[in-house]
Amino acid sequence: MIAASLLGVGAPSEAPAQRSHAQDEPALHLSIEGLSKRFIGADGVLTALDNVSLQVRRGEFCCIVGPSGCGKTTLLRIVAGLDTHTEGRLELRRYDSTKPLDAMVFQEQSIFPWMNVEANVAFGLDMRGVGKAESRDIVSYYIDKVGLGAFRKAYPHQLSGGMKQRVSIARAFANDPEILLMDEPFAALDEQTKSLLQEELLRIWEGSKKTVLFITHSIDEAIVLSDRTLIMTARPGRIKTDMPIALPRPRKVFELRGMPAYSELSGRLWAQLRTEVGPSSSTGTQP
Image (cartoon, rainbow, N blue to C red; front, side, top):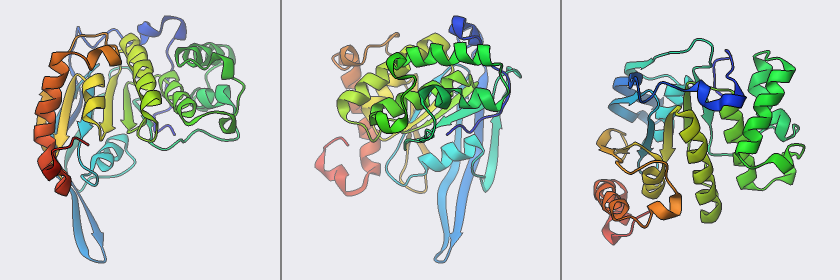
């Protein structure tokens, strides 16, 4: 579940103390220049990513939207160090050597079925040798943050899909990475549960101001969550559009969707995406 450096830990009782940087010092956290990824198979060379360049600033919430097969997940895996690129340059800048550099939350439920909620959330801390008392405080803080206080002793088979994703999010934040990488973590959930978890994520992120790179198929989700949304082309994936999401924070998901600015951003992003989604672009229906 966690693709992270095993270093350091923050203090849960003052979760904002893990953060203090983003607005005062908007330095780059991730820089990618001319990145390409090619796979060699029986049918020849497949180019998944072609000349991708992007930057993400410290404390920024950045979403990437694109059609299926455009290389979004491949790009995130390369950033996480789970895959390698063929060409180009990628730099992840570390600002706090006491913290893990990154952690990843996957689309599929990836918590350990033999561990209860507490043990799952504590996994990264245990791997780094954090003391039991400190780990217990951190785990308790984030379990409460995601609304699972009554389920801390429950096992995954006793939890709904949405609750399992809450555990995944709590585990990632508890490990206190500098950069949080999220690969469509809410894609398999029903709309009501998805909206609730979007609000939970926003609430935790508002307190932490961690750098987030978030992959999604949904324009709606990108607008609700991000400071900037990047649109990718169909394969081979390239960055087509880089659009600021200048909506006020803190955000309430359902209130946000009723704002005229939300509708305007949705229309602009869809105009950029619709030509990349194949035959469905002719229907005029937003995915």
